[in-house]
Image 1 (cartoon, rainbow, N blue to C red):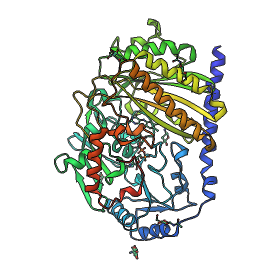
Image 2 (cartoon, rainbow, N blue to C red; image 1 turned 45 degrees about the vertical axis):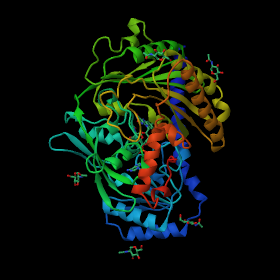
Image 3 (spheres, rainbow, N blue to C red; image 1 turned 60 degrees about the vertical axis):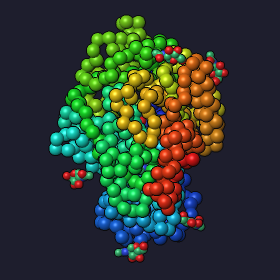
Image 4 (cartoon, rainbow, N blue to C red; image 1 turned 90 degrees about the vertical axis):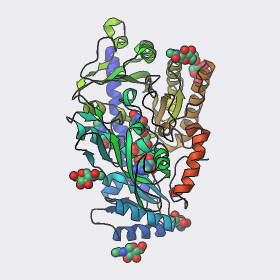
Length: 506
Ligand SMILES: Cc1cc2nc3c(=O)[nH]c(=O)nc-3n(C[C@H](O)[C@H](O)[C@H](O)COP(=O)(O)OP(=O)(O)OC[C@H]3O[C@@H](n4cnc5c(N)ncnc54)[C@H](O)[C@@H]3O)c2cc1C
Ligand SMILES: *[C@@H]1O[C@H](CO)[C@@H](O)[C@H](O)[C@H]1NC(C)=O
Ligand SMILES: *[C@@H]1O[C@H](CO)[C@@H](O)[C@H](O)[C@H]1NC(C)=O
Ligand SMILES: *[C@@H]1O[C@H](CO)[C@@H](O)[C@H](O)[C@H]1NC(C)=O
Ligand SMILES: *[C@@H]1O[C@H](CO)[C@@H](O)[C@H](O)[C@H]1NC(C)=O
Ligand SMILES: *[C@@H]1O[C@H](CO)[C@@H](O)[C@H](O)[C@H]1NC(C)=O
Ligand SMILES: *[C@@H]1O[C@H](CO)[C@@H](O)[C@H](O)[C@H]1NC(C)=O
């Protein structure tokens, strides 16, 4: 039995490695059948000619161009005419002016983790923010300036040992630009300090007309509000100034995995934690999943200190009747090491889709339904190229926003609890199947919560987990959606940002 499970986990690692390699090699194949649009290509050339020396433009055939086509989900890959990589705000401004005046389609990309095709990929001009990767801590350590092109891993590495940290991403590889602009984000620090947008002090950006602007709550309250969830609709941000919070050198937590025979016990421990945990420094993030014909759980835990006080994670203690882990790497480590120990890269470079459902609380029956869904949908995986069926249950404190909410386009004053459903698969022919399944399963879970008495009115879907055609009213509420629409007309009367893709503000 134990041997069998060992072989299963080893096989999983191999399979995932093989899948990633295969998909990493395939962009060159995808790029073969393409025609280049001469208008767009000429714009790339004059943009390059007018740019400062450190700014690059990557064209088809270069390794930098191929590198750019690697995206977390291969289903979002599109082949751009060129990838423009500005290193100064002025160059970024030139790009938006040429794009706007010639009405060229384009995309802005930071960490390329968006699950919706077109949000940060394009067949036109791709503006990559990877030329903005500074992490500058202020002299008094009260705030950090962070370049949009960073992944959170870089930010944690730069802040390690300074005694301060920010509210950022929980797992390896996720980009700063999309995480914040999409209304985010959910962090290991959220119970204590809210979402990342609640810690935003200033955004330095290029407006749709090419002008440069530093935006704060005081300088421009409407635009500041809109940037906190309005995505790529209001311009391109190159620097985010975030408020810091205290950080110990070591934190406690990491990854545990559980095999199928332990799932019921994990469900019990998680739902007890969801209802009973009162310590804002403690957090768990279980992913109920189905891989290689077996359901299982990956459980990430976090405590904001070098050790967790007695009692906090008792429900997960095997000696106290908790579930028995298959692998256990909970330990004291640096914040950055904990983030880099997350297993989320295992499925990157395969096709995929995210889907958002938002709850008032995670009752045991809702979590049980997530498990049932992994089994029912997972059982069909082999027929449809499926490699990963997963439900990320995120039981933050049910009052996390009470003292932290600073407003913003994404409404979160009532502590919405996100569920992220994530399916990964191979083969474009299977897209329809998985896209239909993910909508069905979300509908079923939502209906069950309502039937159980949860009031989901006023709890909106999280833009960073939501599927492309989600109506603005379900993401922002009708009042915020209407305000976004008005502000968009004010700040972008020529609809330049409409030349890239995002949710529609209707
Ligand atoms: C493995 C994984 C783990 C995740 N973990 C978390 C998590 O812990 N918490 C959480 O809240 N979310 C999480 N997410 C969701 C994440 O917040 C979104 O995927 C987010 O869009 C990623 O940002 P990015 O910069 O990597 O993406 P990109 O694909 O580069 O960009 C996403 C969107 O933001 C826009 N954008 C990017 N940069 C800018 C900019 N500088 N100015 C204006 N618009 C810009 C793009 O145009 C695009 O529409 C996770 C996603 C994945 C795939
Ligand atoms: C800048 O771009 C324009 C076209 O938009 C081009 O005519 C001009 O030569 C470029 N300037 C330089 C210095 O190359
Ligand atoms: C080339 O791109 C421009 C701008 O996006 C568009 O208007 C034009 O129709 C495209 N041409 C072709 C042949 O696709
Ligand atoms: C960050 O620091 C570097 C090096 O000191 C400096 O060149 C850069 O201008 C700073 N960037 C911002 C946005 O503060
Ligand atoms: C995960 O992949 C990203 C690229 O998407 C990379 O930048 C990051 O370093 C990887 N993380 C680990 C822990 O290997
Ligand atoms: C499990 O999921 C299936 C399919 O979504 C559903 O028909 C069934 O009722 C669920 N079982 C339970 C016990 O909820
Ligand atoms: C969670 O939601 C259920 C309804 O599904 C409700 O009966 C219960 O009281 C809630 N629990 C808490 C702790 O709020």
